[in-house]
Amino acid sequence: MEKNEIILYKLSRIEKYIFGLKEILNVEELSDYTGFKKSYIYKLVHSNLIPYSKPNNKVLFFDRKKIDDWLLSNSSRSLAEIKAQSLELSFKNKKA
Image 1 (tube, helix red, strand yellow):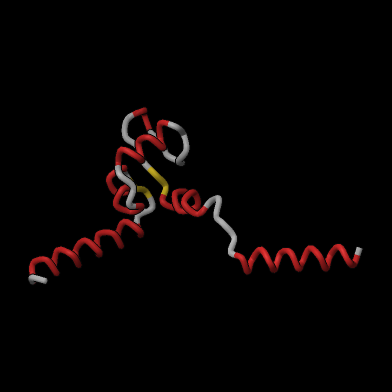
Image 2: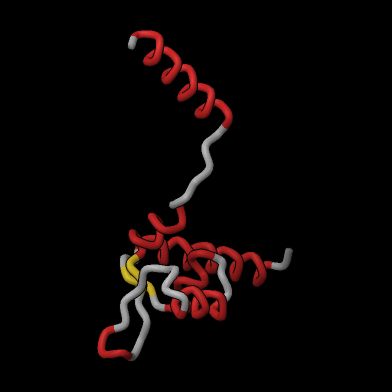
């Protein structure tokens, strides 16, 4: 890797880290933060599938904490979690 490429790569990583610290993101920042294309973000907004704010019906803004919650919603449980819950429920049923 060339020196300039290394510097640009490191700057890009720093920029992404800073986006993670910002509480309010615009569409471009959200795209960098999530890796989603801007067109997909607009599609999510149009379908009301993503939490957003649009003050004065102009510019879109996103609360990073709400986005993080949204990204982690509807998570899948691991096999170990399912087994643990199953055991817990079977013990409760035996006590009752």
